[in-house]
Length: 246
Image (tube, rainbow, N blue to C red; front, side, top):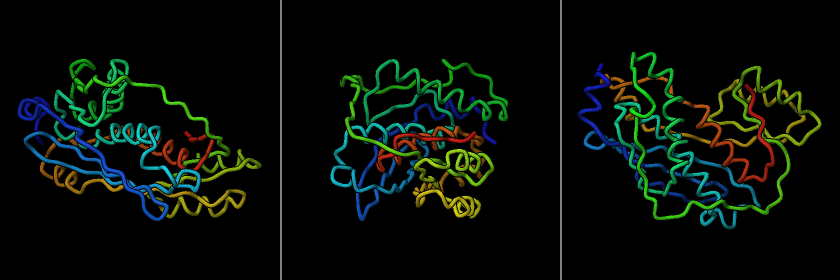
């Protein structure tokens, strides 16, 4: 196992370089690109179902683009943790100071278990500095569209089942991310729900190789990844609420 201090000395930068969007046959496809400078590059792939309401303008939608970027920032943690570089360079979007602080907190507290298990003692300020261009004003984007219904992420456990039953009588659509058989069975027994919406997430296989080579490994804030992906799915399919069971 490589040590935290040694890795940070050797690999000082992590880059979120870009993301690509494409739309085909009712599916939004997103590919995120990351790099640990001097070590390795990575990519994560996502597929999202797109409802009829959004199909016409999904690629040029500014609100959706903001959501997609945010998911990419949360997803970056999966690869950043290999070496925990001191600096993250965000090359594909502008961030204001408030956003930089928000993302730094997500990285720090989201990696709390990872830091503890690996015996790493570091402050929030010292763990990472996030750098992004500031040449663009970060605007509040308004959405005048009408939304309806409740999107319920279903992981296959008792929590999501309780939510599906508690919300009976409402318009409910289950959300399944890389669904397990247990997730599908939960939905099957809830015949008061509409047809579920599935999303697909594919991590770069290189991350497994990095773990086998002794680079840092541990828990990431997957709940943040799930949350951002659920927002994207709700937006693409006109859902007004998200009920995440916990």
